[in-house]
View: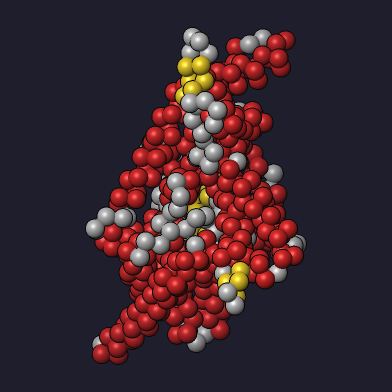
Length: 459
């Protein structure tokens, strides 16, 4: 029996057997399982598995925190038992409140495109290194002219990802709501290519109908709306149009109806909402109270990841990036770094080999990869004092970040490499707040643990 197969078997047994599984999906770092009977779960046994960093019941799901290797574990579980794939396809979902359904839907749309967006952020970071960092008064690109072609390739990649972001979003949205992903691609392309018309005319004048010639390149909300509308339109027309004419009529009518509705009504509205959201966040984190709001964000972000609300900030980040830069992403990275720093303090404190290894792996995942679940669930939350220290350090560092007006021009890896997403002119300031996000949680964790030891000794 292979290692992954054995792991899948142990998880299924601890869940109460395959027959107890309603459905199983996964996000970036967690298995998300809906169960028939939650009382049958042996949570202690699951938490004792080597690859498991923690587990929790949340929003009608049992979530198992795995980390970056979650996809392989998910595949092994689904392939392990023939009942598991059936459960995935047929399981009814428990009733959720409207905001829980909204968050889940946004997560299902945005998480699949996250790796591509992060890749785009890293590409922009490499381009920054080539063009903005100076050595002996010259940029690396000028010092090594042969890198010019490489720079052009990086520019091509970054523009393709962020300019055509609506295509990716419409594709995933259409698929999520049961429509054809290919029609989602087409409607996404129309949002991007509409700028070629908008640059020549302020409006599209059909005589009997006038449509604003807006540009949607890099916009997320209009793309979600377009993907939703074309999916629902396609499903509706597929039911109504006779089979003989479906192939000819469903795609063209779906596209035409969607384009008219999106460009005439939904597109302008969602664009205004998007820019309104961006301006609100700029005021919130840019006013005279910005240290307080930044500190509150840094303090609250890690707890919000326990609820799923943190997915909403990806939408905010993408909107702010389309408007010139986001102050939220640097704070998210600082929160991740703070969790890694607290785990590092526990690594220093631990003497048992197994615990040191677990803390070391969690630290590396948070600081280098921006994946905090191993640190949060495996180390900091069980210790509590380490988690509180990370929240304090994250809050102070985030407050300083917005006071210093630090922004990112892309989303990258949410750990130390996040600096590649920051303009070079802000690097010195960001290195300063990174230092705060490392020193404060590390020091406070050791202080809190020392006081706990003193209190036990005093008793």
